[in-house]
Amino acid sequence: MTNQEILQIAMRQSAIDLNCRIDDFLMEENVIAYSKKNKDARVYLELPFACNLVSYGNNIVASVEPALEKVVRQYIKYYDVAHCFETPNMHVLNDALQEKGLRICFMAEYFLPDVEQLKELPCSYELRVLTAEDFKDLYLPQWSNALCEVRREKDVLGVGAYDRGELIGLAGCSADCETMWQIGIDVLPAYRRQGVACALTSRLAREILNRGKVPFYCAAWCNVKSVRNAIKSGFRPAWVEMTAKSAEFVQKMNQRL
Image (cartoon, rainbow, N blue to C red; front, side, top):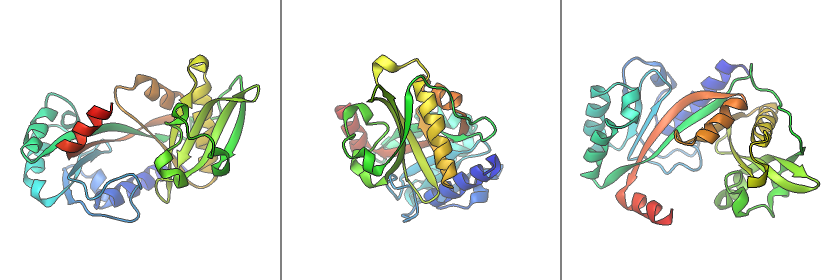
Protein backbone atom coordinates (compact mmCIF):
# COMPACT_ATOMS: atom_id res chain seq x y z
CA MET A 1 0.00 0.00 0.00
CA THR A 2 1.07 3.58 -0.63
CA ASN A 3 0.73 6.35 1.94
CA GLN A 4 -2.16 7.80 -0.05
CA GLU A 5 -3.96 4.46 -0.11
CA ILE A 6 -3.48 4.10 3.65
CA LEU A 7 -4.88 7.59 4.23
CA GLN A 8 -7.88 6.84 2.02
CA ILE A 9 -8.63 3.68 4.00
CA ALA A 10 -8.45 5.61 7.27
CA MET A 11 -10.74 8.35 5.97
CA ARG A 12 -13.19 5.77 4.66
CA GLN A 13 -13.33 4.20 8.12
CA SER A 14 -13.78 7.58 9.77
CA ALA A 15 -16.65 8.28 7.38
CA ILE A 16 -18.30 5.05 8.55
CA ASP A 17 -17.71 5.94 12.20
CA LEU A 18 -19.06 9.49 11.83
CA ASN A 19 -21.87 8.76 9.34
CA CYS A 20 -20.50 11.18 6.75
CA ARG A 21 -18.89 11.09 3.31
CA ILE A 22 -15.16 10.53 2.83
CA ASP A 23 -14.95 13.79 0.85
CA ASP A 24 -16.20 15.68 3.90
CA PHE A 25 -12.73 15.47 5.46
CA LEU A 26 -11.19 17.26 2.48
CA MET A 27 -13.53 20.24 2.34
CA GLU A 28 -12.57 23.76 3.34
CA GLU A 29 -15.73 24.35 5.34
CA ASN A 30 -16.72 22.40 8.43
CA VAL A 31 -19.33 19.64 8.23
CA ILE A 32 -22.08 18.48 10.60
CA ALA A 33 -23.28 14.86 10.40
CA TYR A 34 -25.92 13.10 12.46
CA SER A 35 -24.42 10.17 14.32
CA LYS A 36 -25.97 6.73 14.12
CA LYS A 37 -25.02 3.13 14.82
CA ASN A 38 -23.12 1.21 12.16
CA LYS A 39 -22.06 -2.43 12.39
CA ASP A 40 -18.89 -1.61 10.43
CA ALA A 41 -17.70 1.09 12.85
CA ARG A 42 -14.67 0.58 15.09
CA VAL A 43 -15.77 -1.90 17.72
CA TYR A 44 -14.87 0.19 20.76
CA LEU A 45 -16.94 3.21 19.71
CA GLU A 46 -20.21 3.71 21.56
CA LEU A 47 -22.59 4.92 18.88
CA PRO A 48 -24.45 7.08 18.31
CA PHE A 49 -22.16 9.87 19.49
CA ALA A 50 -23.51 12.77 21.45
CA CYS A 51 -20.69 14.90 20.03
CA ASN A 52 -17.48 13.82 18.33
CA LEU A 53 -15.16 16.21 16.48
CA VAL A 54 -12.65 14.88 13.96
CA SER A 55 -10.06 16.69 11.85
CA TYR A 56 -7.61 15.40 9.27
CA GLY A 57 -6.15 18.91 9.15
CA ASN A 58 -8.38 20.61 6.58
CA ASN A 59 -11.58 21.16 8.51
CA ILE A 60 -13.73 19.67 11.26
CA VAL A 61 -16.34 16.98 10.76
CA ALA A 62 -18.66 16.91 13.76
CA SER A 63 -20.79 13.82 14.30
CA VAL A 64 -23.57 14.78 16.72
CA GLU A 65 -27.00 13.97 17.97
CA PRO A 66 -29.55 16.29 16.30
CA ALA A 67 -30.31 18.18 19.53
CA LEU A 68 -26.68 19.40 19.68
CA GLU A 69 -26.37 20.55 16.08
CA LYS A 70 -26.89 24.24 16.80
CA VAL A 71 -24.45 24.35 19.71
CA VAL A 72 -21.71 22.49 17.86
CA ARG A 73 -22.24 24.34 14.59
CA GLN A 74 -21.80 27.70 16.32
CA TYR A 75 -18.65 26.49 18.06
CA ILE A 76 -16.84 25.10 15.01
CA LYS A 77 -17.88 28.11 12.94
CA TYR A 78 -16.52 30.67 15.38
CA TYR A 79 -13.05 29.26 16.16
CA ASP A 80 -10.18 28.11 13.95
CA VAL A 81 -9.91 24.36 13.40
CA ALA A 82 -6.86 23.77 15.60
CA HIS A 83 -8.17 26.00 18.39
CA CYS A 84 -11.40 23.99 18.60
CA PHE A 85 -9.36 21.10 20.00
CA GLU A 86 -7.57 23.01 22.74
CA THR A 87 -8.05 25.36 25.64
CA PRO A 88 -9.09 28.08 26.17
CA ASN A 89 -11.62 27.76 23.31
CA MET A 90 -12.56 24.19 24.25
CA HIS A 91 -14.10 25.52 27.48
CA VAL A 92 -16.76 27.29 25.42
CA LEU A 93 -18.00 24.01 24.02
CA ASN A 94 -17.65 22.22 27.34
CA ASP A 95 -19.73 24.88 29.09
CA ALA A 96 -22.48 24.54 26.49
CA LEU A 97 -22.42 20.76 26.72
CA GLN A 98 -22.60 20.79 30.52
CA GLU A 99 -25.99 22.48 30.28
CA LYS A 100 -27.14 19.29 28.54
CA GLY A 101 -25.49 16.86 30.96
CA LEU A 102 -22.37 16.27 28.85
CA ARG A 103 -18.67 17.03 29.17
CA ILE A 104 -15.59 16.80 26.97
CA CYS A 105 -14.05 13.43 27.76
CA PHE A 106 -11.59 11.93 25.27
CA MET A 107 -8.95 13.84 23.29
CA ALA A 108 -6.54 11.86 21.15
CA GLU A 109 -4.19 12.00 18.20
CA TYR A 110 -4.08 9.14 15.70
CA PHE A 111 -1.06 8.04 13.67
CA LEU A 112 -0.69 6.13 10.40
CA PRO A 113 2.47 4.48 9.07
CA ASP A 114 4.68 6.27 6.58
CA VAL A 115 5.66 3.38 4.31
CA GLU A 116 8.69 5.32 3.11
CA GLN A 117 10.00 5.55 6.67
CA LEU A 118 8.68 2.35 8.23
CA LYS A 119 11.40 -0.25 8.71
CA GLU A 120 12.29 -2.93 11.21
CA LEU A 121 14.38 -1.35 13.95
CA PRO A 122 17.18 -3.16 15.81
CA CYS A 123 16.54 -4.77 19.18
CA SER A 124 18.92 -6.38 21.66
CA TYR A 125 16.36 -9.03 22.50
CA GLU A 126 14.75 -11.90 20.64
CA LEU A 127 11.54 -10.93 18.83
CA ARG A 128 8.75 -13.42 18.18
CA VAL A 129 5.55 -13.00 16.18
CA LEU A 130 2.56 -14.07 18.29
CA THR A 131 -1.02 -15.00 17.41
CA ALA A 132 -4.23 -15.09 19.45
CA GLU A 133 -3.42 -18.56 20.80
CA ASP A 134 -0.24 -17.16 22.36
CA PHE A 135 -2.15 -14.43 24.24
CA LYS A 136 -4.36 -16.63 26.43
CA ASP A 137 -2.11 -16.38 29.51
CA LEU A 138 -1.00 -12.79 28.89
CA TYR A 139 -4.08 -10.85 30.01
CA LEU A 140 -2.21 -9.33 32.94
CA PRO A 141 -1.82 -5.72 34.17
CA GLN A 142 1.66 -5.34 32.69
CA TRP A 143 0.31 -6.02 29.19
CA SER A 144 -2.92 -4.00 29.44
CA ASN A 145 -1.99 -1.56 26.67
CA ALA A 146 -0.97 -4.28 24.22
CA LEU A 147 -3.99 -6.51 24.88
CA CYS A 148 -7.64 -5.77 25.69
CA GLU A 149 -9.22 -8.24 28.11
CA VAL A 150 -12.81 -7.12 27.47
CA ARG A 151 -12.44 -7.75 23.72
CA ARG A 152 -10.08 -10.72 23.67
CA GLU A 153 -11.59 -11.99 20.43
CA LYS A 154 -10.27 -8.88 18.64
CA ASP A 155 -6.63 -9.38 19.68
CA VAL A 156 -5.29 -11.04 16.55
CA LEU A 157 -1.54 -10.48 16.28
CA GLY A 158 1.46 -9.40 18.30
CA VAL A 159 5.22 -9.25 18.59
CA GLY A 160 6.97 -10.11 21.84
CA ALA A 161 10.49 -9.28 23.01
CA TYR A 162 12.18 -11.96 25.11
CA ASP A 163 15.20 -11.85 27.42
CA ARG A 164 16.42 -15.43 27.84
CA GLY A 165 12.91 -16.73 27.32
CA GLU A 166 11.13 -14.19 29.55
CA LEU A 167 8.65 -11.80 27.92
CA ILE A 168 9.87 -8.25 28.59
CA GLY A 169 7.93 -6.28 25.96
CA LEU A 170 4.78 -6.79 23.95
CA ALA A 171 3.15 -5.02 21.02
CA GLY A 172 -0.34 -6.28 20.24
CA CYS A 173 -3.01 -5.26 17.77
CA SER A 174 -6.77 -5.51 17.84
CA ALA A 175 -8.91 -5.90 14.74
CA ASP A 176 -11.03 -2.86 15.55
CA CYS A 177 -12.66 -2.85 12.12
CA GLU A 178 -12.43 -4.72 8.84
CA THR A 179 -9.54 -2.78 7.35
CA MET A 180 -7.61 -1.31 10.30
CA TRP A 181 -5.82 -2.88 13.27
CA GLN A 182 -4.83 -0.75 16.27
CA ILE A 183 -1.42 -1.18 17.92
CA GLY A 184 -0.81 -1.05 21.68
CA ILE A 185 2.56 -1.40 23.38
CA ASP A 186 3.95 -2.34 26.83
CA VAL A 187 7.54 -2.74 28.00
CA LEU A 188 8.55 -3.80 31.50
CA PRO A 189 10.11 -0.85 33.44
CA ALA A 190 13.58 -2.40 33.69
CA TYR A 191 13.80 -2.68 29.89
CA ARG A 192 12.63 0.78 28.85
CA ARG A 193 14.75 3.38 27.05
CA GLN A 194 16.56 0.64 25.13
CA GLY A 195 14.65 0.87 21.86
CA VAL A 196 12.43 -2.11 22.65
CA ALA A 197 9.13 -0.26 22.16
CA CYS A 198 9.96 1.10 18.72
CA ALA A 199 11.45 -2.22 17.59
CA LEU A 200 8.22 -4.00 18.58
CA THR A 201 5.94 -1.33 17.13
CA SER A 202 7.71 -1.13 13.77
CA ARG A 203 7.90 -4.91 13.42
CA LEU A 204 4.21 -5.34 14.23
CA ALA A 205 3.25 -2.56 11.81
CA ARG A 206 5.06 -4.37 9.00
CA GLU A 207 3.41 -7.67 9.94
CA ILE A 208 0.00 -5.98 9.80
CA LEU A 209 0.69 -4.43 6.40
CA ASN A 210 1.89 -7.80 5.11
CA ARG A 211 -1.57 -9.13 5.97
CA GLY A 212 -3.28 -6.44 3.91
CA LYS A 213 -4.49 -4.37 6.88
CA VAL A 214 -3.69 -0.81 7.94
CA PRO A 215 -1.98 -0.41 11.32
CA PHE A 216 -2.90 2.65 13.35
CA TYR A 217 -1.68 4.05 16.64
CA CYS A 218 -3.43 6.31 19.15
CA ALA A 219 -1.93 8.54 21.83
CA ALA A 220 -3.04 11.39 24.05
CA TRP A 221 -1.38 14.68 23.16
CA CYS A 222 0.26 14.83 26.58
CA ASN A 223 1.74 11.31 26.36
CA VAL A 224 5.10 12.43 25.04
CA LYS A 225 6.70 8.99 25.40
CA SER A 226 3.98 7.35 23.34
CA VAL A 227 4.10 10.03 20.64
CA ARG A 228 7.88 9.72 20.43
CA ASN A 229 7.53 5.97 20.03
CA ALA A 230 5.03 6.42 17.21
CA ILE A 231 7.30 8.84 15.34
CA LYS A 232 10.46 6.78 15.85
CA SER A 233 8.62 3.65 14.71
CA GLY A 234 7.72 5.23 11.36
CA PHE A 235 4.25 6.61 12.09
CA ARG A 236 3.08 10.14 11.36
CA PRO A 237 0.14 12.21 12.71
CA ALA A 238 -3.00 11.66 10.60
CA TRP A 239 -6.10 12.86 12.45
CA VAL A 240 -7.37 14.08 15.83
CA GLU A 241 -10.59 13.39 17.72
CA MET A 242 -12.39 14.99 20.64
CA THR A 243 -15.38 13.20 22.15
CA ALA A 244 -18.04 14.26 24.62
CA LYS A 245 -19.62 11.81 27.03
CA SER A 246 -22.23 12.08 29.76
CA ALA A 247 -21.20 13.87 32.96
CA GLU A 248 -21.88 10.64 34.83
CA PHE A 249 -19.49 8.73 32.56
CA VAL A 250 -16.72 11.31 33.12
CA GLN A 251 -17.27 11.24 36.88
CA LYS A 252 -17.01 7.45 36.97
CA MET A 253 -13.78 7.55 34.97
CA ASN A 254 -12.29 10.06 37.40
CA GLN A 255 -13.28 7.90 40.35
CA ARG A 256 -11.73 4.85 38.71
CA LEU A 257 -8.48 6.69 38.02
